[in-house]
Length: 179
Image (cartoon, rainbow, N blue to C red; front, side):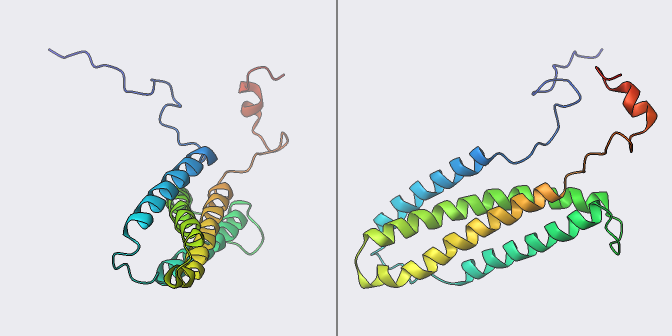
């Protein structure tokens, strides 16, 4: 005997498991939540022995932004089959899309954290807060650069639209509403 299975969540159509582009609203909400958490944490624990802000996270975020920007330029050229560029590996493009989606969310969280931290440091007038403003501001800029590079990489991985002349004859006939 077999049991009847319920349909999977999200519907049963062919588009139910489809991954869409990153929503800017998701990134904004993640950034605002991180900014609020950073403000609360830093206002509670800043004077209880937190060391100076390190530069390593800033350099890491900036390095990731540069690498993802380079990957975006390279991938777009390979997808468009520009002269002198090798063919693109579809699995590599899928991995780049996953990397871009994860990096944009992580960058938004870091940007929110650095924004909350920077805002609090500009409100505070102590010598330690003044010294931490520069790494906090640089972290905010590096995080925003990572978000921009990740969104650019994600956009670069899209398959370009083919013109009407390049389509197969059966593609033109199978489109609804077209004659």
